[in-house]
Length: 487
Ligand SMILES: Cc1cc2nc3c(=O)[nH]c(=O)nc-3n(C[C@H](O)[C@H](O)[C@H](O)COP(=O)(O)OP(=O)(O)OC[C@H]3O[C@@H](n4cnc5c(N)ncnc54)[C@H](O)[C@@H]3O)c2cc1C
Ligand SMILES: *[C@@H]1O[C@H](CO)[C@@H](O)[C@H](O)[C@H]1NC(C)=O
Ligand SMILES: *[C@@H]1O[C@H](CO)[C@@H](O)[C@H](O)[C@H]1NC(C)=O
Image (cartoon, rainbow, N blue to C red; front, top):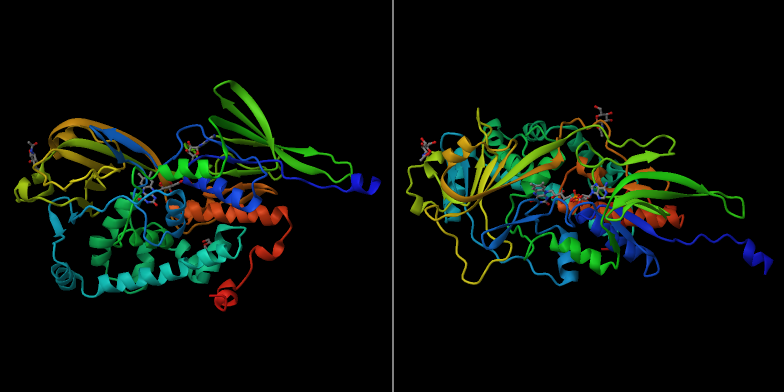
């Protein structure tokens, strides 16, 4: 019996996740998958479950005001809705145009061949080459799913990117999208007229964002984009429920590392999570903690104590402000420099070039998160719900210029995604301390729902392998060639 009591067996008591956005809830889901049914998983959330996935009610319907579109090849998001039994939202026809501050320089037609010829006339083969370029990056990006399927994980954002796309992906992180595309032989006119409107609508920023997030942004202009019926945030509450985690509605204020002496003499560290909930201040102890919110100024204020080297509350860099203004109103189509009658104006998405004095990044007519039976897109002569993205809140005057009248205006100010300015000197770490992890480091490569989901699975695997000292599944080189035979 004495040999039994002398054996030190460390049992995982309970992991904690800070943040219940798509990143935190996906982490809970994958932690359950890796650690099994026996562990208690706590998820802290100071705001609403969903985080940057959020809907707002206008009139009778709900609309997305945060993260809205999902790429058809975002396999984790696809897996989540399948697993949770949620459907994708019904498709509604849409039409895009590009506004240069004076007029529409491009307006999509119903006829593919007309769009094709217009582009060919103006930009030569740039568009086709861009689709091929984005596809070649996407091909490499897709490798991560196979690695994760086989249980491989990575200890830093750089190592994860390198495993997908080698040095080429790291170079993308270090160059602007503009430099990258000029280097690939794209024309400046094409970049200004077509690429920048896409980075402006997706990231509120110019083509001086890094090439990797730039490619993610351009993939966001592919066809087959989808959203979740009833609102994207449903995935977050679904994952929480499915993972049988305990949601703690509280704000985490600090995390301290404590040392627990054990009988064998080997000291094990654990984490004290301090938080303020409905019943005041409290703390709990955990073996593993995953931070799933940006550690950046304005996003969260968690202090770390007892760590050596110290962990900062905020990493260098800023988050970019994007204001989403939902206007239930009548558009002034002349604002777009068009002479078309409002009753003929069926454009649903107006992208913008970076023109002097431009105040808006995009203007889109929104469809509700759930498409009611018989729903049809209406022309601009009808009052409908428009979403304006801008860096600054819109003034009454600006609203009056864009809309003839309105029933309601609802404004959401987001610190939306990193303000990207390559070269990216140092990406924040995934590993903050031996069993303390940081999910949102990945946003400095690119911020998107799927990126948070990929990071979630990576950290659940990494936490599991490090716990069980399975080094063979961490940071393996050349996985692509090694796994090729496994397809
Ligand atoms: C306007 C906008 C448009 C976007 N469009 C798209 C898009 O079309 N497609 C796409 O894929 N992505 C899009 N994105 C990006 C996408 O929304 C984000 O990358 C993703 O939702 C991030 O999820 P997350 O869980 O990592 O972080 P978050 O959603 O930010 O979750 C973090 C959570 O942590 C909580 N929290 C913070 N501090 C504490 C604390 N101290 N204690 C407890 N809880 C705390 C927060 O309340 C929050 O709920 C968009 C984002 C915005 C803002
Ligand atoms: C990116 O640039 C930084 C500084 O400019 C440099 O330290 C780093 O090695 C570069 N990384 C790659 C992969 O080129
Ligand atoms: C509509 O927009 C045009 C162009 O910006 C502007 O001249 C006009 O005054 C606007 N209409 C109204 C009613 O505000």
